[in-house]
Image 1 (cartoon, rainbow, N blue to C red):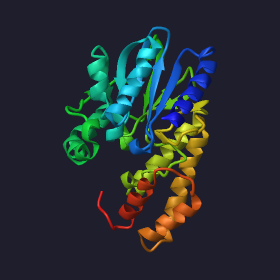
Image 2 (cartoon, one colour):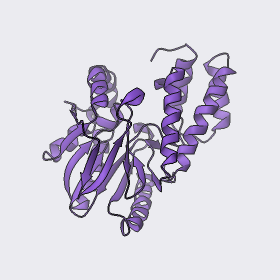
Image 3 (cartoon, rainbow, N blue to C red):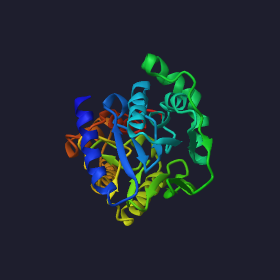
Length: 287
């Protein structure tokens, strides 16, 4: 918690600095390794606030809720950017505490959550115990391409096409990217969800699009404590995708693939992502 608090403090300091010039403030909650280092972001203006992604555990969600309360703003929207449980399991807690806030997501993400929710809950609930949701919230499908906080626009990008289930958010006024599962900061990428060449190519293209925006702020979907909130995480993810493809082509099994990637990224967090991804890609495990 101490490390996480220090990260949050650092984020608030930097956010406050650009909030004086830009209309929205971004306050990042970075979970620990037990919650896959997933990020959630409180976005707020003068009077209104929005939570982007709600954490994995009840404890995560309560810490995010504390940020909302501390901000003193009216929470109008809870936006779920991805269909992975660490992005939406916490919505139950936040919805109970802030019933006035709409829980929204894109149609593509909602469809994926609905398809996999029962299985995800059956798998994770026994492992999470009291930290698991009891009645997970299925977000409302939102067909719009923008959201607003105090009149400022937040764009929903890549909500159609090959990555309709993996969109991201862009705040033009802040030149900020958030709400995504494409960008990782100093952790192994979750390659098990990108098994085909086409899916990895779409991922790489999305990263190229993000980089072309020339963002000032990039909030990765997952990151280790202390990761810089800038475009370096886009470059990290781009390089990792290329390194993984090369290592896979030169590996006979998952053990060799894991060894190669560990040698290239000795300090990367989320080793589970590498272990599962390597086994899936080498045909030793189904995902």
